[in-house]
Length: 86
Image (cartoon, rainbow, N blue to C red):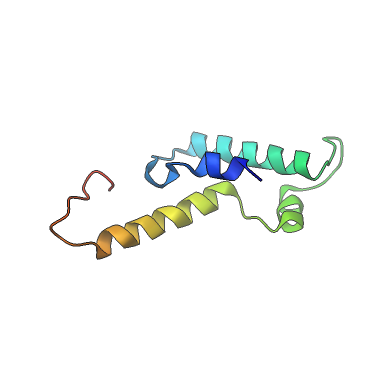
């Protein structure tokens, strides 16, 4: 799937609001429903769609990547300026 890298580009340093998280998760769900070819009239829950694909919600992935970036910044040399990333 080629959409994930496009969405994740620069997501490590985004400021995520509740509204943007809802929009990202809704778009992610929409993509998964279309990939699985589930009609909108089918009574399938979002958790069922995620269990079928084995993919967590996109905001969970973004939060994990942000934590990884924070770990790299914390372990970096003190002489380097990382204040913009934080």
